[in-house]
Every structure is written in C-alpha cells, then in structure tokens.
Image 1 (cartoon, one colour):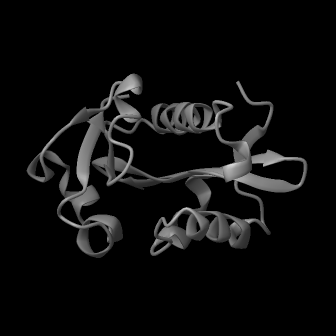
Image 2 (spheres, helix red, strand yellow; image 1 turned 120 degrees about the horizontal axis):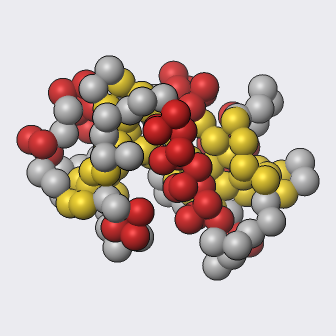
Length: 145
C-alpha cells in the first residue's frame, strides 16, 4: 500500500483538490458545498489524492476519487475508497452511491453493485452530479456500508 497520509481537507487545500480533479478530467461543480466530507491524501505538503462524500438524509454520493499520476499503482485509490466508506459508516449513511464513466470495474471489490438510477435515493438523485454533471450513460453503483 502507499505511504501517503489520508485525512480531512485542510483549510488551504481546496485549490489543490480542484487542480487534481481537473488534471484527471473529473468535475468540480458542487464540491465546495461538501468540504467537511472531503478526504485528501498527502505526501508531505502535497495533495496527491482525493475523495469526497456528498451526504444527504437518505444516502451519500461518493465522488471526486482521484490519484495524481505520480502516485498511481501504489494502492492509494483503494485506501481513499476505504476511507470514504469508513466515513460513511461513521456518519450512519444508509447507502453510498457513485457514478462512473471510466472505473466501473474498480468499485465492486468494495461491495458496490450496479443499480439503476431509479434505485438511487431521492436526495442523492438531486445532487449536481446526477442532475447536471454526469451523463445518463454513466454507470451507477451502490453499496450498503
């Protein structure tokens, strides 16, 4: 596994997260409203990975999972996903949902299963990711943590 440290977003790290997400072509819209549930991976002072949960009353959206190109292949994406699932459990989230266009094969190892958009809780379906950012062709997966 990697030796990067994972923890809550720091005060001055949002711009670094945005840069990382843009570098891997992931959307940033709506992310700033969920700063208290963004986790970052750090190597020294550098942000080298991120993941976020948008927590709603009826579930959470896992989004913004990104690893810097220089850090890939070390298990950091696995560690970030596990940290996000642990955060969801700690917050008592009943279901974690995600949308992906490129990584549908990555998430089943954590227990995520493909579901239809109709199966997604109403609160999560109201997120920016569901309503405007991700296309209807994105794969929807869900996990009961």
